[in-house]
Image (cartoon, rainbow over all chains, first blue to last red; front, side):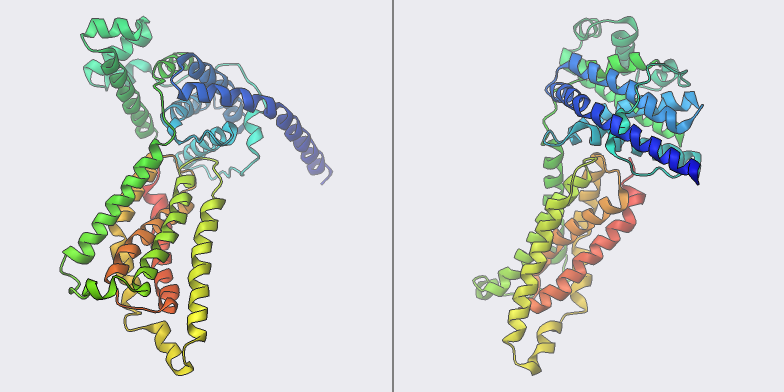
Length: 201
Length: 215
């Protein structure tokens, strides 16, 4: 009984800290999100980098030592934040939106694992509670994911990501327009997201 | 794939994303639902042609029915839009829907108070009470399919509630069209049987939600 009270108090203290931290961090994340929605790639990348740390902490605390699962979930959620970004309403705060996506992915993970684990609906501030910069091991192999894509899409993703070409260079190399390259890469990412989902099923 | 590599790819894919796009798709789904319901009600020959529109088109009861259903649909639309956006508040949609029901219930109460006691039962039951909810559910099928597809493309995270909202929206759309065929004229009938039909659509949606809305 006393132990339960202590842990309850600790948790409450933790929540207050998370809340204080969340107020300023929310503004920063939201500003980056809005710039990203306007097409600012560097803001979008910065947002995803920040979120990857928060997500690693959030999932890590709930999955314990399963680091490969944690990093899979981090990547899956980052992909979701990206692909579902049109569902973000600029009139609303950013953190609850991202938190619900992360929670959905976590629930999905538990459902697939058939683990009978409950995820309580918490204050959205818990998402920002701990920043964990340590990167875990990753199970999925980029080459394997890319190989399932149509050759042109996988070549473009390889060129732009692995070789480090710019969109313009990749366009010149493939003889496509820059916007066609962007569309193709976008489609490739969607297909990859679907493959990740199917593989987990 | 390393996470920083993924982030670099995603950042490079940051095309401008107007926030209204999802709502437009939802609106388009409703339009598809309207056309589908119109085809079922007026084009399928399942129901006999019934109205001489020229005699009813200027009467208030004729418009009361689709107005109520469409008002509910507006509230349900706001609800569905919120359900597709993680963390969004759904209070506004609930309020609009509740206001629609309060309006028709108030109208029905006044209507019944002015009706002779012997005729009240008939004012409530009409001549098609058993048929109306079933017809509304059937009329809602095209809208239900279209709205579910549009909602699934958003990011619903609570699938039972999201399915319920989608069902209510489909019911409102279907009932708006069925109302143009329906011959009943009393507010009491609409308050009871239209509401029942639309709520039944919501129930179907809530059952389907976890099955079809997962993304």
